[in-house]
Amino acid sequence: MAIDPSSIPEIPEAVRLEYEATGTGGVFDRALSTIRETIELAEQDRTLLSSVPVVDILTELPYDPDDTVYVVWRADRQTSFWTQARKARYLAHLRTKAGSYGGFVNQTRIMVFNDAEPQTIATQDNVLPSDHIYFSLLPLHRPGTFLASPQTILADYPQVNQLVFGYTLSSRHRYAVIPIPFAEDLEPSALATAQIGSYLEVHRDYDEADGPMRALVTVNPAFIETLLEQTRALIDDERVKAR
Image (tube, rainbow, N blue to C red):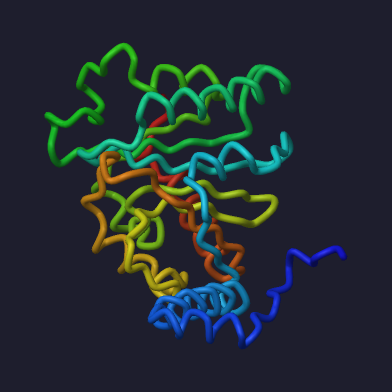
């Protein structure tokens, strides 16, 4: 019999009793509670936490050459996300798509650099190492679609600013993919779009050594509309310059 992947099967009471008989009933109940909270988040907030790393999501989403995808890259951070393996996979994906559609990707990318600490790697004037992902990304973008923004101006764009690990935002299909550090004690309710800034602030010291990030995928209409408005306003800000 075919199983509907969108439905949650009932768990027989006998299964619960087996767990309780072994003393692991609490583990069973917590697992079910998390599943229910995840479903509630999807239903009420139109938001889901991926079960796979964010790079998997970014490379497996359908590619629409007619979309404009805004990518805010938080290069103002000291900690690292782009391990060699992640960088190679992401670049291979983008190069394949660019090669199929005129040599460029469908992205407008904003690289946020740290203008408050001029010695960090992502300032305008520092010399980047030759293998930095910047040099691989730049030629994949049409002229005028790879931009640089000083971090200090993000205060004028609070919804952009609160996403401290950046995001990928589809203007045509109206979804956002938000990288988030995964915590063992993560409560799904903490990832509602109204709460996500607080969660990210608590976990802003993430480093790639902590393991791969997950992805928060949201289609919440109000959140997406505000994020689109602020992203476009940031792009039009005279303090943001093309690379």
